[in-house]
Amino acid sequence: MLIMKIMERSIERGLEECDFMKGDEQYKSDWTTESKANLKIKLVNKKFGSNLCNWGIRIAKETKMEKFLGRFLQ
Image (cartoon, rainbow, N blue to C red; front, side, top):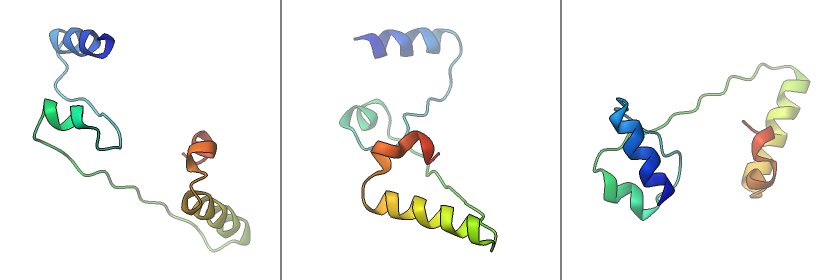
């Protein structure tokens, strides 16, 4: 499996921690019992344009369009 080779090489080169990103796939819990919580903080000012943009991002996420618009919502 390609991911296993990449991980093995990374560990040989000194990798101590790997971020598997979000999701609860079984292989993640098979490899370790440790986990860390990710926290995302967004600050939005009171200007109309900022609020409109924030509202659009929130609606897109709530309507599951996040996958479709993912790279724009980062």
